Length: 119
Length: 108
Image (tube, rainbow over all chains, first blue to last red):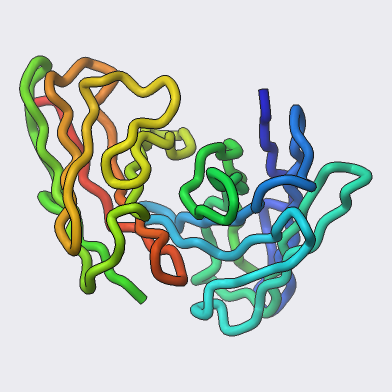
């Protein structure tokens, strides 16, 4: 079965770049759309963006072009960079797979990784 | 962005009771693009419903979804102990996809 696992630093300084990686096992990232979603402490969920099976990307305009997503198909991983972070970017970050054909309902989720932005 | 407002914020019920959760959108969109998730403390959200009323694989039939336009409902026909959690609705018909603020179903 397909599993997703996030990894990356748990602490990032303000104004620096947050970098996370999602490793996918049991399935190829060359199919489906692969997403990043975050949840601030005690808050709801916010979609960040995706990278498609073909490598195209799309992002939530709320992030004001601070996010990039790229992939390494040889490692079956995709990654998120979020630049110029502030305390408002402190959140649990999830990677997730959509249902199919760009249908952005999120069928599979990683366990999440907490990122704190603090000096 | 479409704003999804979930109500009530908290629902206090006993096992065996029926739970009715509401999700109202700030503008209309196709019901084909409404999903529901369940989240328990310390866990990732679990995909329950898509297309407003279609259950995801492995979801018990006590969970049902309905609605169209701007008003959607998740119903749990008879609450079991494992159903006490936070539930989120999500629309993916209009970019960007957005989530509601959640309804907590707690044990009375």
